Image (cartoon, rainbow, N blue to C red; front, top):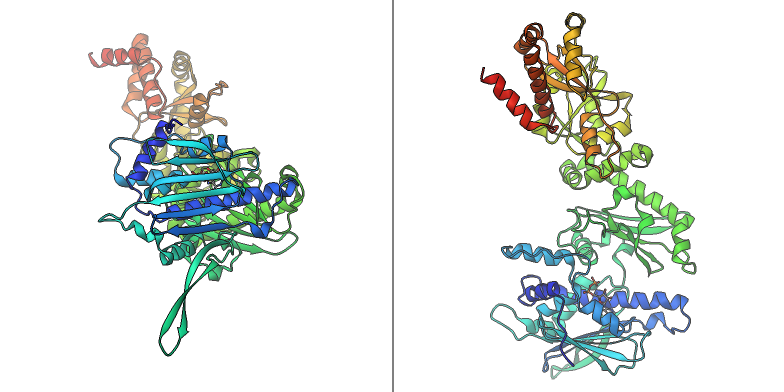
Length: 626
Ligand code: ADP
């Protein structure tokens, strides 16, 4: 039979694998064992509804054996096996879930990270073997098949003989080199300790023949080797153990294995709940966003077990969207296995668990914010957008749960703070929580409107994420204080005297201002103002839609035509005001040019595009060449 080629990306990944850039080779064993365990889970779960399948739970197991002379290591299971098609699609492609962006000039570490991220599972066995032979029989197939490969140049699939349903994987272990002693994977003691270290929690027995040194004759000091099949793992899932019996390293290893992450989790939340519906849960906050987190392919959810049987890999109902980054396991004996998954997903028991889990996560995050701020900030920088999205999503119905978890950049402290911290520092007479939005902290800091507020020593929250303004708008009020955009037209920070002055200036020049606003299409109104300190002009808005919100709407695929009502404000104390007043009297043409230039300046400062840049630059040149 002709050799089949691996898909090209798989081939490249395999090359990297074989050339062993992933330094921790030991993990291949846990990958094979965890595949075997999944296969046992699948078969058992199927047997609950498919009565033709005769499966005894206590007969399901994983076997490990080795042969030093032939340098083979065998991992076998009596799980679901694979049909010919399954063999082809499962072992002929790597990383089905995504496109591997391999770049030529990537460092060793970067490549290793990619491999870790994709959790290449089965293929990691090529790190330690020259040849892999997989013999498998599925209950859906009349014949068994054997898949064989010596690495990157391809694989073959042939019919084979196998009596029992399940899979047997034989690895031909590489010869030792100066750097790596591959023979350790043929050593009883090594294998035992690797299994104990990485696969102890697997809920099916992992069996191997073990040698016992037994004293035969005490006087003669004679020993006899005695061989016995033993179960090497404790089979207690880590989430069922008491937290005090689990080390940090155990949690980390479990997380990295189960959720294919190359980094330790940022936080572990292990709990056991007794009540109407009892359950145990082990949740993790990843330290970075999963590689596919921002893609359509990402599925949220927790692994759901009942009575030690895996029901669903990713039960989405257990997590609200704003906690979609949480990984973990839930095990409840109170969930009925005899109903369909669909009904289970709708069940009251499951809803109750979901509710508990949500408040547990909220509580843990609150504690982390209180007691371990640095870690919280690192968390927030990674997943904060998700929480802010949660605040305004679904018409803000969840905002009360989340409003104390969101943080914004404070102009005064130059770091992230919470709303409660902002409010507790509000000055006497300060009515509102001030915020300003823009593309970056630097850009917001340079906004003319910011200066006036900062001059009065009020703190301002700088909103730099596109969701931010929608988030504060959804919160509406925090501890009775409402939010106020510093770019709002009626900021109301002037003294009575200043207000009178401005009013007079606007009244005295009403014709000029009206004519100017007619020259500028998108502008609702032009006015003189007192709030600008050193700056000549700025744009403010009337009503609910701010300039930053308009930018978000503009960027949406279906333009709904939602526009901010813009006001052009001109600094009455700036020399430019005198100039335009003169021009208005003497030279209307020139007045028109100045108006357009000033408006474009204000747009630029607000980060809005200039629609007619050629015309504006021509106007500027005309004016400055005089
Ligand atoms: P992953 O386990 O992350 O899906 P792997 O490369 O480890 O990726 O395995 C690919 C697929 O091959 C598995 O999803 C599973 O369908 C199948 N497979 C691997 N090992 C076994 C096994 N022992 N029994 C049945 N199917 C298996």
